Image 1 (cartoon, rainbow, N blue to C red):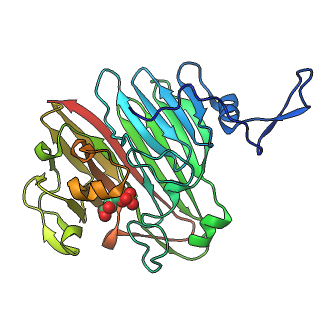
Image 2: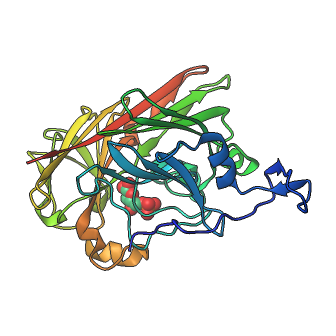
Length: 331
Ligand code: BG6
């Protein structure tokens, strides 16, 4: 069963208050974060927010084009399914949906570094953006019925302890006939900084053993299952074991070919110079604890990134935008 919060009772939390005019209630009652988001942003039959008992809030989106669920933590797209089609995005049946835990599947935001921190091994892999709260700052139903949501990472003492560089991070998610995601990082300080990042997207596929990826031919890559050795791709990428590669100087377009689900998934990007391709295969997935048995066979990560030698140098006052669009086309 896919994790789902429908039917969860709204939970009272202490930070947000609204006036209560109802007799016999205290003048102010606490309002859950989901209730506050519903009050400010809900759109009838299109956008609503739900909250689990431990405070994990999810935006539920249903447009005429597609449905999607997006967690406020990490501004993390958990699911996306174009109308009348199978899901495009994979979410582990054992994904942990809880405050402070990273979610196995969906579109994790890796920021402000990719992989291990460049100098501090104690800091979490892939940065911290995916495990901290974000706030929703805008929800707009566009004239063509796409729904646009804009999130901003909430800065705190905990985030500043790991990333003191003055900056802002926004994630814009547009749910339409394709899924569009844009990460915008602004350097609000007075010195340049180095930025690593990825939209670590998990795609739903029929079987990894029959899946191929085109668009990376002739690109160099760092092979992480071979000690980071630099190699060159020849032809399409196919899979016969654990695969963990950072393709460098990539061109912003690749395709996942899925003969079992009879579709191609087009991955188009801008502001990204690296593409990470990851399949944990059986042994690594078994060790990770949040893959169900055989779960690894039905997913592949194709990550729109700036990683390794492709990290971004961001000047004071500058904004870097990295975008990705995901669309499926029947074979
Ligand atoms: C990929 C990395 O991007 O993410 C892999 O290249 C890593 O090395 C994988 O194992 C999953 O990372 P995590 O932190 O979500 O378990």
